Image (cartoon, rainbow, N blue to C red; front, side, top):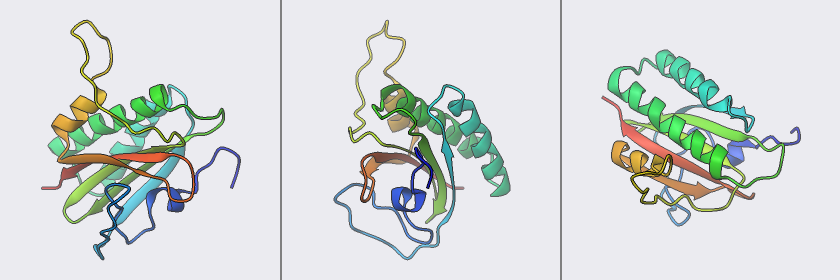
Length: 162
């Protein structure tokens, strides 16, 4: 594995298993999981690249309409949060994962920062600070889970599939 790369299997769960919802959730189902993963550098160009990857993957999975549009917004917010707030060593990228299971679409962004994502109340004049509040409002569920065996976390949001 090259410097700055994540072991995405370790980071985001193995194919065919459901990810735990939180660090203390040990419930694992035998639900079939279809997923796709990518690694991107920590640069401003990663958000548009992530949206392009998401659109192509959802087209391949025949997921469109409101679910696809909302997933794109959720992914943008998660990637932006990681790029703006994760304190990581230079050269470390971010991991992306899209997964379908149990009638859900899961969008995940992983980074090497251990800090828990916490929504905040943005003041009326603030230019930022609304990303996680937006995710809370649009996602069926959202949360984070620590990386197994390494520093960092994966922050995720789920949408119901039609």
